[in-house]
Image (tube, rainbow over all chains, first blue to last red; front, top):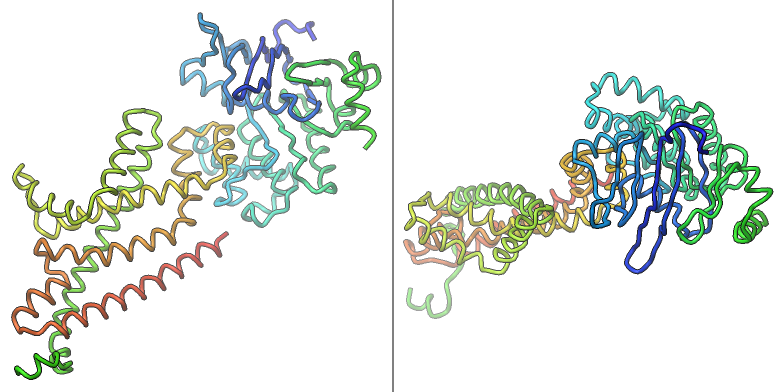
Amino acid sequence: MTDSPEPFIQIRDLHKSFGDLKVLQGINLDIPAGEMVSVIGPSGSGKSTLLRVLMTLERPEQGEVLIGGEPLYSMDGEGHTTLPPKAQFRALRNRIGMVFQHFNLFPHMTVLRNVTEAPVRVLGVSRKDAKAEAMKYLDEVGLAEKADAYPAQLSGGQKQRVAIARALAMHPEIMLFDEITSALDPELVGGILALLDRLGKRKEMTMLIVTHHMNFARQSSDRVLFFDGGVILEDGKPDDIFTHPTHDRTREFLKSVLEV
Amino acid sequence: MNLSLATGAQWDWAFAWEILPQLLSAMRVTVTATLLGMSLAVFGGLLLVMMRRSHIKTLSRSGYWTIEFIRGTPLLIQLYFFYYVLPEYGLQQSAMVTGVLALGLHYSSYMAEVYRAGIDAVPKGQWEAATALNFPPKRTFFTLILPQAIPPIVPASGNYLVAMFKDSVLLSTITVTEVLYTARDDIGSDRFRYLEPLTLVGVLFLIVSLISVAGIRRLERHLEKKR
């Protein structure tokens, strides 16, 4: 993936530990704009941590991340990661959105309010415009009729759709999906994956999707990353990785998950 | 008269009825002091818990120590300090204002701990969603976290309301003419009868407390139904 002039996301030698546990051990990754990347690998391999670092929920100890050429994390003279000035940091973070495994909807707000609150409070959109847009996104995820419901009145699948609409309403250029179907009943998973597939096909956002659904990774994404032990062990076209993995570790993993 | 003193005072209904209006009007002072004190504590507690949670070390430390200091010293001493010591530094208010301030400050430290428990109970994912949507910290706290933290702390806050209501009798020691002062200093020492006024004060406290508890239960149920 070195054919594009400057990759939209550039990650250099990224390290993150929790105490003694080294979760990311030198991640290097370039992602061009509009690419849909599936991230697979055993649990604890660092997939989710990479997403959380990109969302600034965790601070890396070492390494650099550039978004559209602007530094989100950079290295100071002593080898520690530093953040850009606050205004720049916040502006950069506005370009990134995330959907979580456990939805994390605001339970005290209606569905509509969940979707409009950030555009109004963070982007300064008028309530009226935010509402019109929110309805568009709720319609997109098939939940326009639930606008006035509270999250507690929705099924898991519906909650996750609202969470996706909420993230979309911020117009992120990068969307991070962290195991978003793992907390759902099996029969609700297909609908969410179809929605992801639709979003990816539009190429409007750069998407990183941590998933356990190998069929989805293979059929819907432009690229697959296989994480193991805090590094990217394999990086390539879905068909290549699923049919000719270069590492034994990848083969073992695929064998174990595809057998189930 | 001597005989009745020796065998204990006899309950006098006529006397009880006679003093009831005076006690009821003094009870209004007690209730007013409590409501004002609690309003102060609700804001003061929030202020203290925000100090404690501040990223600025000096602010969070002083929040912590303020809470511990106020919680760890008796309300009566704080009351005396406000009433007797502060005027020496030119800070003189009426007894009622002094009393309300002392009650409010003292219970601010309890309310701060109540808020803290409520805030800690909000799932971490809520903060993370707020970060992912790029909400500024103040927005996150006031519109996303606090509204979720408050319903669960209504019962504990209600307990403190009732506790403050009962503690408000301490204001009688700084000459606030609340219900105990009226019963003891106005009626008791004037008429040399304490049985009826003190009994009535106790009964009035019980009635108001029971009403408050019922009100808090209703509020709790209302908040539960909303979700």
